Length: 138
Image (cartoon, rainbow, N blue to C red; front, side):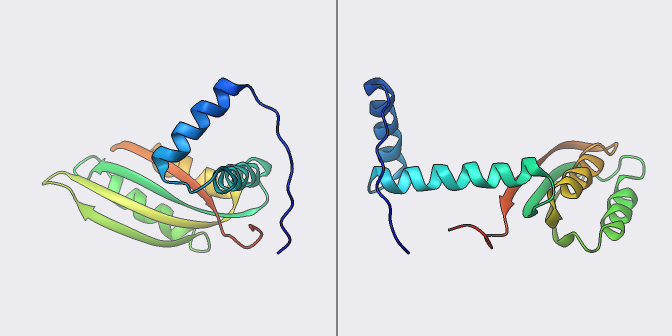
């Protein structure tokens, strides 16, 4: 892989803040941190475009005693067999469960699945964490 050097002009105060943060995070140099920022920018763009193949997780906490939440969660997971790769179920206490659903597919469809799962009655909190399949990422 060929490396390319380029210059960036930014305010000194902004660079000082950046340097403090990358040191806290353990980066060995600015180049590594900037490469990670560019990769994150590319991944976010993949999700915004909507037709790229992406990956992610849908994490939710729900009360399993609430109405038909368990049945609806299972029905939705069976409805999207091609996009839902795996799931992890954890009993948090006598009433609350944590479910992590691993997804892969077209960004637009994954967002739709997340919206449907997270809006179910009984889901107390949830979040879609978006990433990439890594196929096109350097």
